[in-house]
Each structure stands twice: as structure tokens, then as C-alpha cells.
Length: 182
Image: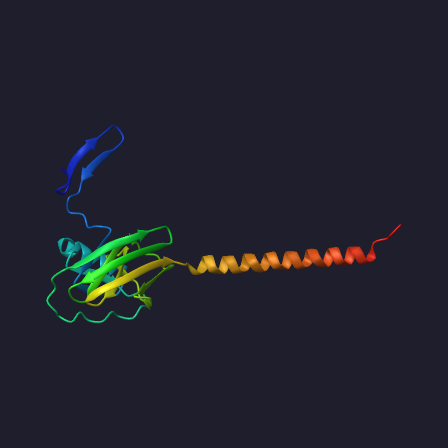
């Protein structure tokens, strides 16, 4: 046994443990602790590893601070994954009070989110995953991946192709005007 995990399979090259205390791919929590940087986040995670189902650790990284939770009685939140693709994740969140929806996928700056069709900040939560502040009620939350470096590369490639095509057209036109006809 390793830290409360049960060994379920062992071979010459691998050991597989059962973790019954895992968090689902998407879940809701009522509150967050805001920290200044990754070091503080890791220290907070080490200090309170068993409370992450109630309070997540947020790094703002240039995002505005989320609204304070209202103190309404938290009766839970339900998060359903409606669609899960490479560049888009669609969720439905039903929140008893304002809180956070955590998507247990790696935080990366190219992700954007909308809440009921309106842009909303994505926070780095628990040092590695994504979280969004969600008010009480039922909401549609969509994460889309549209990294700036991809957009810049696509624009540069399109412009480069345009320059090559214009150069080719000029060369063909110049050649046809100056060619000797027999």
C-alpha cells in the first residue's frame, strides 16, 4: 500500500494502484484561496490536500480576481460534460450557490472560456488544472482552445503563401510577355 492507495496489479515493469479518493474530470467547489504564485500554490496544496473538494487554490496570473462567493449556503453543484473534444469542452453546471467549476485538464494559456455565451476568465487552479467562477443557477460553460502562437503561425503561413503566389504570377506574366514567338 502507498499512502492509502491499494495495489491492484503488479508486473515486472509496472504497478497499478486504485485511488478511490479521486476527483472527477469536472466538478464544483464553493470557494477558493487566492495565492500569488506557483510556489505559494504548492505550499497551500501540501498544507491542505484533503480539502480540495471544498476550497481550490487559485493563481490569478494577470486575470481579475473572481467575485467573492456570497456566503449562500452551499448545497452542492453538479457538472455534466456534454461534449469533450481536442479543442472544445462543453459543460453544463448547476450550482446551488456561486462557486467554481474545476475542469481537471491541464491549464494552458491558449484556452478560452465562455459562460452562457459571454467570455469569462480561466484561472490556474491547484497549480495545474483550470477553474472558472460560476454564479448560482444552471449555466452552459464552454472551453475552447485557440492559442495565440497557432493564430500567428496560420497568419504568417497564409501571408507567405500569398507572397509566393504573387511572385509566381509575376514571373509567369513577365515570361509570357518577353518570350520569343516563332
